[in-house]
Length: 533
Image (cartoon, rainbow, N blue to C red; front, side, top):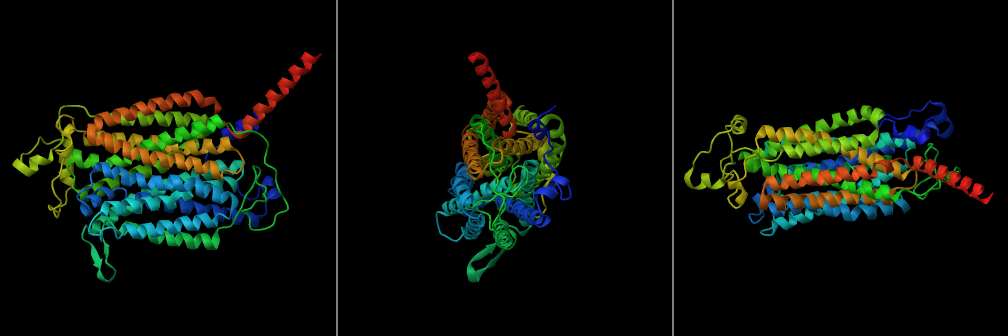
């Protein structure tokens, strides 16, 4: 007969318990159930808004940076994108610890308010006469600091759901995050129709264009989020069975104080999961960072084209991610989360292997346009790009193609458009699979104990990945080109697969470890008794 812990591990990621079942009626009233799930869904929305705030400008940062500050290069772009994650890495453990001892409304509202102010600052970075790139760096860092509330969101959801509900809720949280990554580039693509000039509100020196409109929308969504949290969010904590627990966050008195099960969390599994999650976020962060410079270099896209086309590509990957979440729900019933994580890493490796440059066709060099107007050999990808070009295209955006300052442009073959799209599709399959299973396994390993600090560290590890990923790829890509950059990524993925193989048997639910420890304890007692006889 299978143990309860094993059954739990094979549970689907999605699908909630509903009121009406015999177990539910015993441990929770309908009013409490409704209040609890309204609060959880408000936090789903908070996660969605947080991911929109990150992705809504990710495709336009590079062209906007080039426009407001001519001294900025691709290396500085890596630091700008990484600043978001640096702020999040610093804030996540702080907000997580805060949420363990105080009502979680406090860190949520403070963090969102910081993000709103940072978005307003981003809308005005064109105003100073110099050092504009540093203002962008500060603005994105503060947005990231506000996004440290992800740890609060995940710890709240982990503490407000039973073991049966928790897996589903964590997957739904990741799905909301993925939906934010879908709609962020979609919004950016729509705002691209405004153009670079846009309109100016002279009274307050506010320019509303394709670069600032997205952050103004992000500020509005933040204000809306604060209102929803103030009016609808309530504090809830339940044990593994769904019984309400008394804790410092809960606003009402409770007579049912539940003891958490005794036992030690497997710290090796916790550390390994943090490392796995770091690599998963590292890989996707470097990919979304390099998409815009790569496509502008390889396909001679203008700034406006890069924002539009790359926004469409990332939006398509977001839709793909939602479909993957639904597929993981079905697949996890049969093979479990660990196998899905392993398969996702293999798919990611294949995607980056396909991205390696091959052949004897080379990207267009910028100096060709500047000096002799020579026309390079036309490739299939360039034919498609020509069909995409608008007849009203702005020809004043400057030279296009691979910059002459990047020496590798002269000897590294180009990555064809079909090659790039195939790799992006595979990475879009592997990343969401690894992301949701990492969070799910981590929550299972931790069990029902308060997870604020642990979730803070997991979020911090993901933030560290978003810092190092952009910096790594921007430095290696600028200096050595895509062949070295993507070869190193393939090597990192191989090492990660080996790590997963080493700790594979340890990535099991807390309840399974309790059962295993109990069996070991009883066996040791029997051995001692026999020895004493």
